[in-house]
Amino acid sequence: EKELLLASLMLYWAEGSRRNKHSIQLANLDHRILKIFVEFLRTICRIHENKITLYVQLYRKFNKKRAEIYWSKTLKIAGSQIIINPHTDKRSKGEEQRSRFGIARIQIHNYKLKNWLDRKLDYCLSQFNE
Image (cartoon, rainbow, N blue to C red; front, side, top):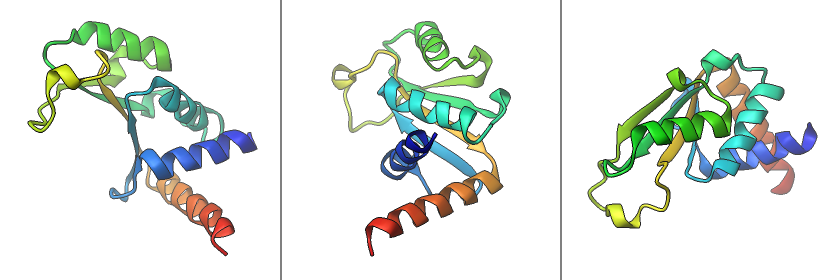
């Protein structure tokens, strides 16, 4: 559990968003990163399954249903908890999109857990920066 906690804190630090005070967010297109973080949420944080939402940014040329099935199977999240939106960033081109399953963002709305996670991360970082 200690390794999972440390790995998840580092992933949250590198790939997460700390802007929103009420929700935990972590985005990536690499399913391995997201699998570790979802395992952390389930095992250490004991988040109920229905509290996990996955938002996917997907280019229009890719199949939405395939992306939903991929993320659902990979992360063991119900399809009803996956929201797929079209990727609209004008700076990137569809040909450059590396994953036909899109960029996924895990989100949990939980103010107390968000504060706990931020405090844990700050403490962990302070141990290396003394």
